[in-house]
Structure formats: C-alpha cells, structure tokens
Length: 443
Image (cartoon, rainbow, N blue to C red; front, side):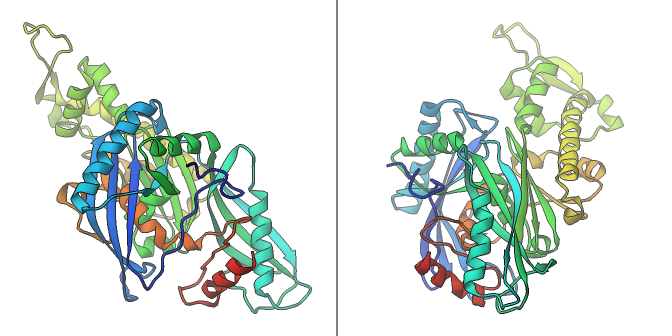
C-alpha cells in the first residue's frame, strides 16, 4: 500500500508519541555504504538536565546492518539489490529483538534536498494573539512552500515576530498590529521519495515517516548547548556529505554535497592502481588526512590489480597515500566551508562544528577541518541511547540513532492541509503545546 497521496503533501506523517506510554520504534538508515535497521524500546523519562528535550529513554533491542548495494551517492540505482539488503538488515534486527517489524522510519539523502525559509505576516489590528491567529500565520507560511514536483519533509516555525520585532518564541496573548512567522521548510523531489518508499514496500514493509538525513544525524550527534547556541553538524557518509545547522533548539538549514568517503577510496584505487577493496583497507589502516615528513621513508605494499600470481605487490611511500587522501578531504572541506558561507547561516554556526558519519573517522580529519573551516571541530558519536553494541557506538551510526530520536521532536513540526497541525514551540507543557490538541480537532 502506498502512503503517497494520503495527505495534501502526499507524505506519511508520524503519529506523536505519548509521553505516558512506552513505544517500540523501528528505523532504517539507507546509506551508500551500509543499510542499518534498529529496533528500540522508548520508555517515558522524568524531565532532566541531561538532554532536556527528550521525553523518552531509548534502549536498542535489535540491530542489523548490511553492506549497501544498489545505492550510488545516496541515490537508488538498483531496486532489486537494495530490496535484498533491506530484507537482510531488517531480518537480523527482528531476530535479535524477538519481534516482527511492519513499518519503519526511513532517512532520505537523495532528491536534491531543498532548505528554504518562508515568511508570512497577518494583520492583528492591535488585538492580542489568539490560537486562531497562530493557525492562520502558520498555514500562510506552509501554503507558500507547496510545489507540484517537491514534497515537504519538515516544516519548523523557527521564530515569530510582532510588529517587526523578531525573535519571539511564544507570541500567544501578546498584543500587536502584525504577527509574522519564519518557517524553515525542507523539501525533496517527489520521485526520490517514491523510489525510497518503493524499495521499502518491495521488502513487504511500510514507511511510517521520512526524515532528511542531515536532520537525523544532527539530532544524534549534537549536545543541547550546541543545538541552542548554534552549531553545524557535518555528516560524512560514503557517497554524500550532509550539513545541518541548528539554532535555538531547532533545525534552521540543511544542505548536501555529493562527495564522501567512497570518493577517497576511488582516488586511492586509481592513484595506486589497486582494487577498490584493497584501497578501502589501505584507507582505514594507513591513510591520514595530514601529510607527515616521516611518511616519506615508510613504505607500504600495494596489492596489484591482476589475477596473475606472479604479479608482485608494489612499494610506495606512505606519504603518497596521505597526499592522495588529503587532496580529496581538503576539496570536500572547502566545498562545505563555501556552502556554509553562501547559506547566510555562517554567523549562526559561529565557532562550532561537529563531524559525524563513517568517513569522519579518518585519521587527521578533525585537524584538517579545523584549519579549513576555521572553527572548533569535534567528532560526534551518537548520544542518548543505551543497548548499542560496541561496533555501533561510532559516528557511522549517527543517522540510525537520530531516526530513533526523531519521534520525540516530530511534534515541533507544522504541516498545513493535514488532519493534524501539531506544534510545540515551548516546553512540553507550554500553552503552545496544549494548543496542539485544539488545532487537531479544528483543522
């Protein structure tokens, strides 16, 4: 059964979590390098200083991951191959958790993710702001973002204004002549979404919600202060590198670059005339994004491409490997620096950048990123979940963990022309959160 066409946007929408109940959540991270299925038990938690936005504790009870097939730079290239990998990953997670998965929350990297701010203003006539006014201004901003060829993945009200005064978080019951809102809308091409859903449906599973990859990895890798004060999360995957910018607790910008760890591997295979799998091993074991003078003397043996047993491995200085790797890493970082600069969000990012994703584990990467981005850089691992096996605690699993966290923040989003228009802009018990119920009934 296709979920497309089920709402005006034609996108599956997550049902909000009940803060009183436990939930089982299943997620699927489809990447160019690997496909990961995680099953988690979410149990209600008391409010705490650590990760205050989280309503539930997350315990991973099942995990399965497979080497990706049928995906190139985040785009589905072979449905049959991908379907097989999805089945294997889900099957392994189901066996470990001892339960059957029917629907999943899935990530989307392809589809030329768009990130736009829409502004709408309505006339208040000097009256106080009522729920109806909020509904009107949010709906006006959402309507602007509707386009035939693109579907809305996320729409978040990033701030309100009254009579031109910006930065108001909760305008309810305040007085003014004009109420405005800034809405951050993340969109993707409908065809990419349909292909993603098709690959999941073919494995006899349904899609419960779709989350932009940069949003998911940012949710897992950033700490509260970073999300509040402004920070960029850079997720370096195999085929793509995604950027997400957070500020004042919300996602304010996303972007993606078609370069990742696999490009480094291919450069090595070409430059050293060796097979892709041998190049991958060389990258992991010997490569560094930094060149070192002592590397000139150290020799590394490179397995030949041919099948002929008489072919001897060649010896090259380790410095050559590092030079090939650092050229591609520098290019990627310069591209990211320029994208952040062009986005206009550079001042919001400030001095804070977190690198995550499988390719962020390359030796010397953080140092190169510090130099080129001219910012403080740390490597971000997925946080705030228990039960992860040691192998899955690294940055390569940030997106999957972020998908698991996502249901707790999904109600911050506003979707027009949908049976429910949910929002929670303040804390979970604020007036605005309570208004969610009213909007649901009246929309």
